[in-house]
Image 1 (cartoon, chains in turn cyan, purple, yellow, blue):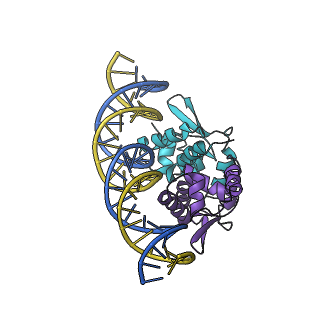
Image 2 (cartoon, each protein chain N blue to C red; image 1 turned 180 degrees about the vertical axis):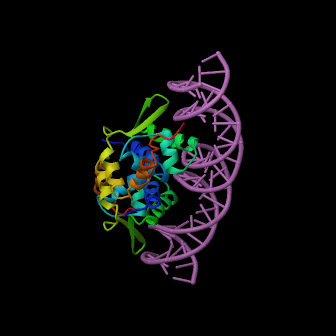
Image 3 (cartoon, each protein chain N blue to C red; image 1 turned 90 degrees about the vertical axis):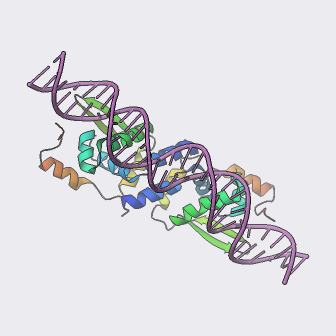
Length: 110
Length: 110
DNA sequence: TGATTATATAAGCACTTGATTATATAATAA
DNA sequence: TTATTATATAATCAAGTGCTTATATAATCA
């Protein structure tokens, strides 16, 4: 059972356009920070700060692989299905991901 | 289909402890402002401002009856079931409502 | 080792938020 | 009509938000 305070924290964490887009991307696959920078066309510090906010409510998980840190959705989270329900109502972000793949830039930082 | 911007606005509107509690009360019944003031133990202007915020995203409806303005959940809202899903995970607010009824204060302003 | 790449963090700043106090508006009661 | 009750709005202010720029940390490469 959630508390009202925890629900507030969670909704504030996901209730921002950039963070909603990040979550939407992560429903498709896991991505490293530099890929999200490319997909969202925002500065790296800004993306890192948004990821931190999402990490704080534990809706995303991080995993370092060499130079890169990959982020994924936390499928064990109490509100994971709730998040999926929401993102299912939002425009899918598949097109931009496909562009990355086609351009051979699935990891494009270097 | 929602837009990311509309989803952000909506989550910001419901993502606040007092507003979540208001919504939770409204899943049980409709209430006038003065009842919500009593239930939530907050100032009348503060409650009115929270109600305004919820009205702006149209998740609640208002209806004047004499001196009182009653608020209810908008069951036609695109995100109504989403909201019910969320409140179902939060502690129910039935006890406090029952106290009002027992005290014969279901409309206690005057 | 030093240079490069990837990511995180800190400081600064404009903007938003949520409370309070004061006041305006709307309906009813005397 | 005037007084009272219910609700909405406005002004103020401290705290939070999200961006930018600058810098720190972490891993890899030459």
